[in-house]
Image (cartoon, rainbow, N blue to C red):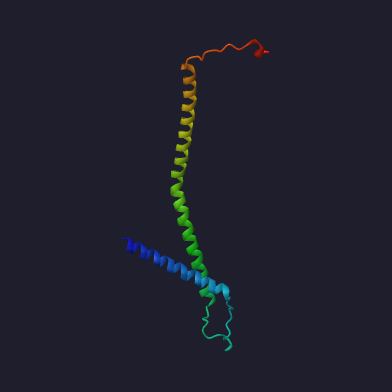
Length: 126
């Protein structure tokens, strides 16, 4: 099970690496679209891409980004009720805690015996 998951992650990371290297190579050396035969002075190792190929590459990139974004949105959409439920639970716990502190302070004040009153000298009252 773990090997299958690791292999799947390796395939995903390899595909992402290939896609990013393709995009970076395209951005590093922009292509010129022309129907003319390329001059012999160009490097023979550089492959040419047609405008349709370039458009489908950009379409694939945008489709991959949209799918990743929609998956992220779906995960957030599914988890949002749980987050809101936890927030409401914490609010209720805070309200109950505050009420219990108020109740305890009122009950403890009402049930406590009165403290002995000390006689205050008259000169301190002035």
